[in-house]
Image 1 (cartoon, rainbow, N blue to C red):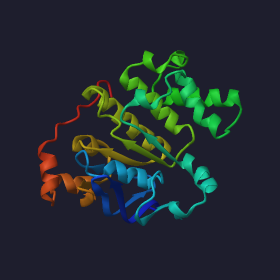
Image 2 (cartoon, one colour):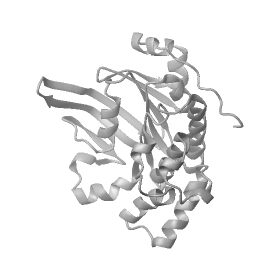
Image 3 (cartoon, rainbow, N blue to C red):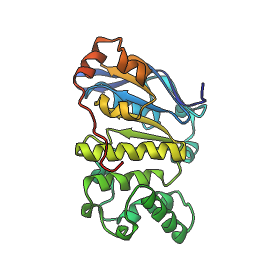
Image 4 (cartoon, rainbow, N blue to C red):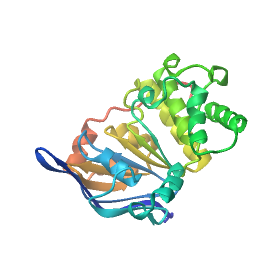
Length: 261
């Protein structure tokens, strides 16, 4: 069995609201191994995005613990957690909303390198150009602004930015749901290529099982804050055990192969 990169053990997250307590995540244990893609699926409100934030240490669990490479995130001093942050990066649902609109494409990719004091300006620029090329952005367009790119191109820029600090884990929160189906297929092909080239681990969150089927090695299904089923992608799609999983599968529409890929 591959080494555990991220491990959540009996994690619960309770939010206190005016209407009372909301148990967004309820006694969930999940592991992402090195070089593995774990798909986390469920309908809106199932708790999957909260679980992602917990596994990145962006929120503290009410109970339970999350370990990254053997370190309990909730017990790390702020300085040590900041040093660990580059190893965990996120790609969000809305690429335009996640990019800095007043920065060019290359400026967006250079910014994390500047914030973490990686190299000088020239080396940061060189690396940003390499990353834009890696994700399929014409480097001749590097000085254009996010609004001048299509949605799929914006997401490629966001992925390049997430890769800038050479993370071990890429958390993708509905990264294709705002894109056209044909563009979804292209982005999924890109993720697959990056995983194979760079040896990345992925936590890939989606409400769409067809998207997860294309990318994930294992799948965990969440419903009402709990994991109701978990297994290899092949087994889960062939013989789902939980009624909720079967309902999700019955609504699956295929993601077409990207043209020319």
